[in-house]
Image (cartoon, rainbow, N blue to C red; front, side, top):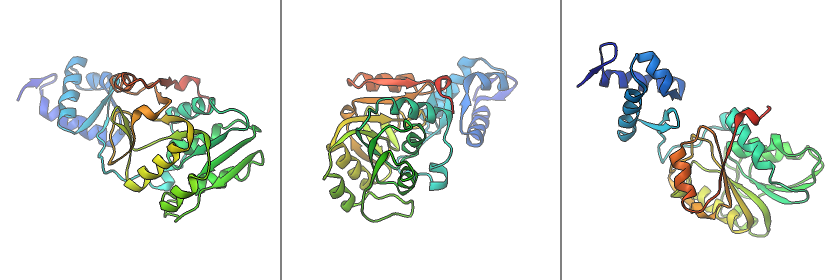
Length: 266
C-alpha cells in the first residue's frame, strides 16, 4: 500500500470515496482533491483504479455509481418525478425537432415523461404512447390526438407485451424518442427482453429515431440489447456525459448533440 496526502493510505481513501459516492450519487474530482488534500491527478488515478474494479463509473470531471446490467427500472414514483436539470435540458432540445401535425411516439422512460412538459402549447400532434401516466397527461390537451397502445398493463402502468408489438405495427410514425437503461457504442439496451423487443417494433415503424440519454446511462450497457446504435438518426445527451463515450458513438456515424442546462428554464 502507498500513503498519500494527509497520512491516509490510498486504499483507505478509496473506501471513503466509495462511501461518499454511495451517499451523494455523484462526486467531482476537484472536490475530492480539496477534501483529501492531494493532487487532482492522484484523485483521477483513484477513480480509474476504482472503475477498473467495477466500483464506479468515471464521468467528465468525476464519477457516478457503477451500473449493473440487470438493474431494475426505477419505481414509478421516482421515474415520473420532477426530473433533473439535465433531463429537462435534453427533453427541451428533443421536442424542438417536432413539427406541426406530426405523429410522435413517446415511451415510458423517465426522460420520455419529461418530454410532455416541453411539448409546444397548442401545436396539433398525434401521439402514441405505451405509458398510462403519459396518456393521462396528454388526454387533457385537446390539440393532441392520443393513442394508447393496448396490451397487458404492468404494475408500472406501462405496456410492452406481444399485443403491444402487434398494435404498434399498424401505424407509421414520424418521430420516435428512444431511451434505455444503457446507450453506448454497443447499442441501446433495456432491463428486460420484453421491453427490448417492443423498442425494436417501434423503431421498425418510425421514420426518424432520436435517442435520449443522460450522463448516467450514456456509455452503459443494460441486460437486453434492443437496437444497434447506428439506427439512431440523432442522440441527445447532457453536458456531464463522458466525452470518450460520445466520441465512440460519433465514430460509428451517429450524430450526438449535447444539451446545456443553462439553456433550460424549468
